[in-house]
Image (cartoon, rainbow, N blue to C red; front, side, top):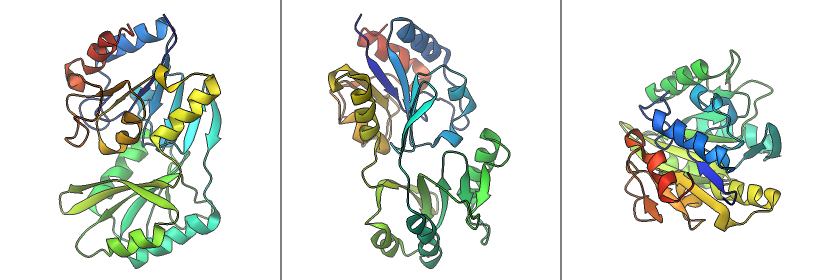
Length: 269
């Protein structure tokens, strides 16, 4: 069997049961069989490496595309890491505060929060989850002189100047996902030129493969760059409506053997 490159989103694709979630037994079995057949297995996630769940780190994936393409890791070695300038990173803090927007700035080693304000409930939840999933110093604050991040998420509400915020960061970041979440809107932003698709291109070039060798699995809006980038694209049965209809195959939901079913369908196992 020819070696293929398989790329998996995490939440809602490999992980079931919400956060922190679990990998279904059938998915683990399918992944093991695919790896035994010689295929490369990669995580391709909006999460930075510091926020990778324990269940993901415990499985021997061949590599990771982290933070929507801002970092590429292969066999334990970082091959690519997009570096933001000091002026962009620290300038963002002033923009967030000016526009009355709270966020989490996600890096390889830590995630940074604004300790000068009372964090809104969704950010308190992210902070608590992050603290539980990472090392003891992985939760830090905006005023840390070593503050460094790869991408970020923000929450806006009726009191936020979100249009002004987007205009202020438009030269440096793209908003790849925006969705309502209770009284707020969740927004995910990544540096321009980075995406889950660019991470795939990097590994394809590094390994001397082609896009025809790639299979991608996802469920949400920030997966669309990779799902529409290759011909062998798989949407989970539990995918967001915006994803359904934009892939070559729709499998069953993650908690109904979706990964295993798709791997069998494409004769990868």
